[in-house]
Image (cartoon, rainbow, N blue to C red; front, top):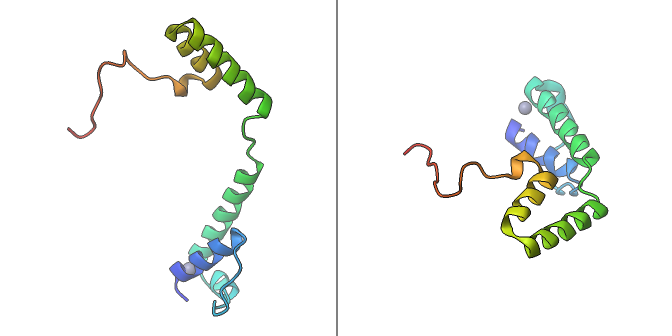
Length: 105
Ligand SMILES: [Zn+2]
């Protein structure tokens, strides 16, 4: 079994997919391969963090929708403020919106 075979089969197993009938056993590879043992620890940790991450609540989503609709009725500048307040600085575009930066050009 190659590292790629091991990681493909193990990733599928971590995702809850049933093992293929002809899938080779993976445990021996993980015990013999330090790289894949480390990969498995990282994959398990990522899975735990993904499951534990809380998405936006229904109340927060409804509050945001109501605020956006209210601001849209008032004017576009107010809409920008609401989106910025609710989503945070990461959701606001930089600059005046008239220029576009191109990487590598
Ligand atoms: Zn390996």
